[in-house]
Image (tube, rainbow, N blue to C red):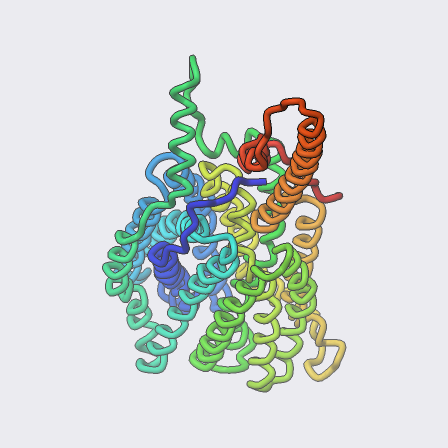
Length: 528
């Protein structure tokens, strides 16, 4: 069990910097995916329409490949070198520059193959930045929160990252509604990237107002003191090496990656690939209308996510809500694609909303659960959260557009007659892929993760045990005091002398302290 976080004061600036940072970074990151078809036409014009889309999503994957590296770099910065706050500042600068340059980058017609190469490099720099941003906002916000609000504050961070998608969808919708399709394909697609210039100064000011995590500062000072006290201290290893040196931590890390598999993939399936599916792949509606539905679904999801985050603080164990959401995702993902076959706007919206509701149950307490998984050592928590989150995002989120597009085209060859009921199940194949990942997640959270309890529940059980121990000792001491008083009365009646022992001595007697008890108490591990 991790130590109690007595530094949590629900600091609003820490939460606000995490929120605004997530909105900004995920806006920049999502704009590319929403404009994938236009970017594919500009930078891969010699390919067919299908290959343009696949090439564009391939560049999208390049950013995800860099995210684990960004997690390692920013984890070291946030855990060992400059702290959580300064790591967030670096990530903001690192994503602003490539976003603006992407808005100014010449296309294939001007630079030839140098243009898509530069596009890939800029996306890789963006991925490096995003690899540290979201984990940093999680850790900073939750380390500054009190135990009763961790789930809600974590859901606010998650909602803000979804808010980045919402802002990106909103801006791209305005661009497509304002300009003609020809103008968007030629030059107007650049405007959402250049919009980053407006957001960056505001965000930088907010982050500079934020205080550093006191939880991290106290832990770092303690580690430095221990280092001075030790004799012949060896050179301190990196946070990554410390994380991977323990078999228990490695198991936690791999289990965390498996748990996050359906979340990382569902996120991009619902908010990024679904509009492309409805407009480009199936031709069921225009891109602008698909974006409008996406804006509505994302806004609804943000509200659901905040409610579920607060709900996770009320459960006796945060994993209970996660386990409730997982079976819903298993059913809801293929059900969404089945509802798309209704060829009705109402069916499109309801299909996405029921998927969003199940996903919000799964994600509501997930941010707090991820941080609490590593809070036993605050000098490793940034690295643990960042690597687990970003490796899952790289393996399952970054590959999702490519995998889903491949599965769609592959399954389309199995469709014989659109009007036959037997032709429905090939349309469900992309959703069934999510169902398989959700089954993997359920296995990992049940049999792989070996966290005794989340921190909030662990603290409660630990304190309950401590209080029972104190009450038991007080009852014993009172009983001994009563016996001693009776002996004094008996001796006094016979004229013998014996020094009295005041009742107040109970308070000064040796009752075990909370610090000593919390160090010696070991909560039971869950059965495998």
